[in-house]
Image (cartoon, rainbow over all chains, first blue to last red; front, side, top):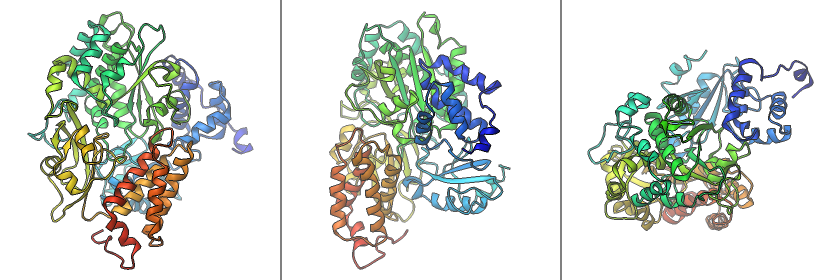
Length: 166
Length: 435
């Protein structure tokens, strides 16, 4: 987003990441349809979707940067700013909320040192956010740490779970 | 099986027979369990015969709308020379619903086989399975299963040596409830914002990439192999009295029951027995207060309505609600219903795609008024305002997200008025008892 960033920008789509993108082409009849999987590749490589990557993706898929930005901001799982090394999503929608997930959310905020939902811990290790329905309502509380889906979390099990993520 | 619990004798396992068996996830394990026999059979059938078999079975959409599956398939054009598409809706995001997740986690090949048979029936060479972004584990399991199916020659340019092409592509969502709406789902596959489209044109005429398309739910497609294997007649007799609701249904039960989980029942099963027998009833010392039977978008039911309710499409409608996705949220007497309805409204406000005014403004204002009630800052006339607002949100937008927000609000105010009044009157705390 800043000039200094642009100057240091290294393209995402080189080497193995480029190969992954190219492997996707035969799956869709047009380039625009590659946008969601392409943005996932960016986030996998960079941890978020920087503005320079938006421009790179736009160029790769023959779209405008504004169009790509519009799509990025529609979907809540794409990060438009840097987040902690480990990104924690905790469900507090009604079925989970009425079975105690708000206490789990509080325990996560406390034990990660994030201070508040949506914030990143000062050591950069964790970001905790509250999300709407994770689709595991019978296994309260479900949380998602990076790509790990963890069920039946309680405030008591939070410290041991966090210890697995350095 | 009432996953994760052992199978209950009153369940009818068809889809869930192999839930919990890790070996059933592999191609070899699936073949050992009778997998891909139905697809081999379907490859020898005429497309219309497959459609007719599914029609005769009485199978209806398991995602929420309950439309007749065979009928939906028959809307696809024939001999139009265009590519056709099948989309499998695995964007399971409706609060209370967690059944498709178990199908993908335990029997991924059942879903692939169901897709392949549906593709043959609708002459669709390509199927996109749209899996919500948060379902990381189901995605990985599906990815392995699809790779195995290609390696075994079940999928690909010469499916099972038939000379026919069957491709299955996984597409990962990125966090948007609305993409479970079928036209938003197609937009999302096309690399667009997940805004629902105006219908008509209907997907069977102009859907994905502008081509004839059918969108089916995971559970619907996963039921197809059993129908081809055992016949439409067998499936249609899985029925407890109402011939319009046939087959089995996965019901995901959550909330205040002793054994939350995914249960497979024959349609027509008594709702009371599902809650009290299969799920073990309420926690000790608690009584039933309310049930949302079909995912958060359907009206709330009272214990009296649950009492003699039959769990099928028509049976729940007769009690003023809907079977929906089969995501059942059970609430006991400790529940602050006003707070839970506010949380659901907040969910819809968060998930509104914001293209229709009545939805964008309506869901946000519904949430704010409910928050005002909870803060004891509301006037009694605010309940009328909520009802009037809900009326403005029903049947006036491109998709039904807005209607879904209104359903628990309207049914909540009408059936549980005392809970709201407790927040409006001078005497506090009654509604908060036990929370």
